[in-house]
Length: 187
Image 1 (cartoon, helix red, strand yellow):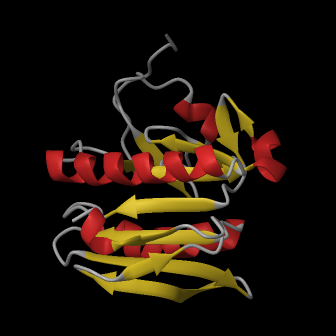
Image 2 (cartoon, helix red, strand yellow; image 1 turned 45 degrees about the vertical axis):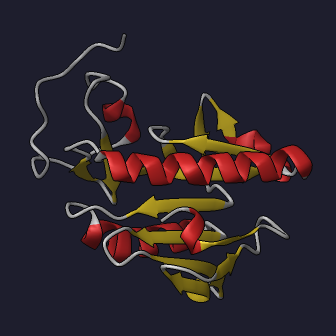
């Protein structure tokens, strides 16, 4: 287990990936431009069911079409020394597999965030900017309260909506070519 440091004060300094390595492993944090962001509280059961359903569907797709690997949170994605994230689910294509070295050091091809009351601003605004800036090709935002799915794709360093659905309706991925599902399958 890594040595621990005192409970961090988020605004006290410019935080880095190296700092995170000294935290107690029971605490979860992300860093955005040196700002430390606490990941507490843990997600609720509905959130975890959604993540599980998506993971199972992507895993089945990858068994038929082995184009990469899917991972569940918590798994650190280290974009730079002062920018990290822990997407709820992420995919790394075979051609990008070299970024997976215990953690993910670079941009995954796909990141998925399931909104919770404490993460809406971060997931809908901060991570949109962060993921685009570091080159995540596709970003899925799932809103359990609205029962909606937005699949954003990166074009000219900005995200545009590729497909979306509310409660039901097909959505598809460009990164996972041929992967399509109905929103009703997860809600």
